[in-house]
Length: 273
Picture 1 (cartoon, rainbow, N blue to C red):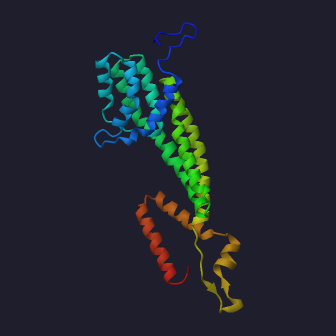
Picture 2 (picture 1 turned 90 degrees about the vertical axis):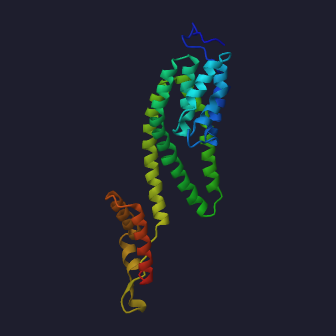
């Protein structure tokens, strides 16, 4: 297949088939299987794209050597979005864009794409799914770990369409991802707050054992007869927001953990909880 433009559609004839681009997405899953503290993801990054460079630079050993050397430099970004970057840069190599331009764009994109990918995958999707799965598994339901595995499997296979997105859209893919990342982050934030709120109500428990009165039928339980009738679970609600307020005051989270342990031990020792 040639690199010439298609006169009917006005689009460049693609050197790689849909199957090959799908395999690029799958190969990107193994980028971290070869890891170097000196070059980070560079060895796996280079391995994933090597068959495609060999096809582009067939018969041009110097060109292949150059592209391999350029991509063995330090690389560190968000692996779930690597297929988009690989597809995008592959179109540039296919069009024989100036190597300096390719290297400059690649280095410029690693930082922003790391922020987008980590925010969507590791700071939003996986914590939410992990929390839901753990909650289900805690009740003895085997669907908990199965759910987590299915979501992770979905993310594994989702790299195939991401590779097609990067390859077909070229540099326009960055604008598409940036636009969708804002929508995804907004929706996921709403879902995340809902899930976290449910987890707080399920896992944070505080009950007073203090009673008022002489005992017997005349004794009044502060927890059962007073707090629960005013606002059930008001103590865990108030304690969580106290910790949140302290975090907003830039209190070190380690100190909050210490305070929680000390408070729990003290209240248990005096018999109030």
